[in-house]
Length: 531
Ligand SMILES: Nc1nc2c(ncn2[C@@H]2O[C@H](COP(=O)(O)OP(=O)(O)OP(=O)(O)O)[C@@H](O)[C@H]2O)c(=O)[nH]1
Image (cartoon, rainbow, N blue to C red; front, side, top):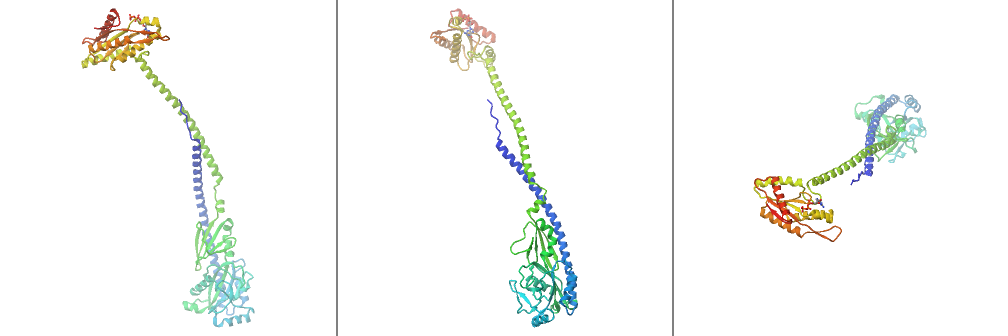
């Protein structure tokens, strides 16, 4: 009976799919990681370049402001047109400055006089302004010192900045004081630029402030620098205008740019600069610092998903196809292995089956070669094998051994009268009776057609005779039903009993048994003769 070959196809496909998907996803993410690294390196290079360019730009602007400051320092009577001409000469069109301002120091004692003198000499509607805490400009009141914008050269229409005290911005004020104390140019933090008292849109920017001393000589001591300062030359720059040209290419491609000053003000340079107050720069950024003119700016480049996708050589479709291809290859491979395996499986089954049959027929033929097929008793050849060994064993242990040779009486007549089938039944019943009457260790065989032999091991002649007579009696009582009728058949046998003697061999023992049997036949059958 063949077993059924089972293969879990559904499970296989699930496993094959998961395997292919895992392989593809792993490869994809590894390559994507490499791509991301390349993008990061490219951004790093770009950032380094930007830092250099911006640093140069700032230094360039400082140099220009220094030239203007020398004009103010050396000129006794600075006029609006003179300042404007001079400022414009050094700040060519196309430069990134929004305003260049001259901010003289105005002490509280002469603040009103100063306002008045300016009105009389230059600007009839001149007024001093300063902002409140919310950044809204209000009229200047009780401050000990003012640094209002007196003259301004501007690239905007915002001439109203004249009179504004732009020191109201904390970042700007701080940079001004540092410039005054150190005597050096100072870059401010980021702040909203007020272009007029009623400015609505405040661009975010920064200022570069230079302290101006009489004759352009910077006093050596701090107290002297504080006492002798004449005012400040300041360049005010919009981040949007100044930085845009450096960041343009990157922002257009989807890289977000964040600028951070020393005061932790963060500017997001996008389509329009936005000052962030609470949000942080995203973590996944390429960051670099620039130290310029007393400030430290941090610039962070954050590539958008869109930018990463465009700069990646990986195509998800290719990997989706890879999953399917790997899946198909696995399926073909396993189908091939499955077929071979199934053939082997069934071949093994057939072999096992055949082997089983061979084994059972071996047993069958082994039994057939030793036994009589009708009665199941040992056959003549097997009997002689055993007889030979038992004679030798009896000799060695000095045991007594009896042999009974039995032959059914007038058996030919039974065959002739009732048929061979009934004859066979009689033979079988006689054999069963022998097995029943003799002991377990005795060896019984069908010696010939209706001749039998019983070897009684470890048995004296007296015991043997007793067993033989008991068998004779049992057979006498035996009745076999004729096949196909209710008629009963009786059978008898004649027996020759003998015991192994010292000089005996197999032939002599058998011959004496046969002789005794003939004696029984001769004396009238149905008897046992002992010899
Ligand atoms: N039914 C059947 N008959 C068998 C078998 N083997 C031998 N015979 C028959 O047994 C008979 C033996 O006959 P005989 O040798 O003349 O002996 P008998 O008729 O028993 O006469 P005595 O031995 O002198 O008593 C023969 O007819 C054989 O054909 C067998 O296996 N089955």
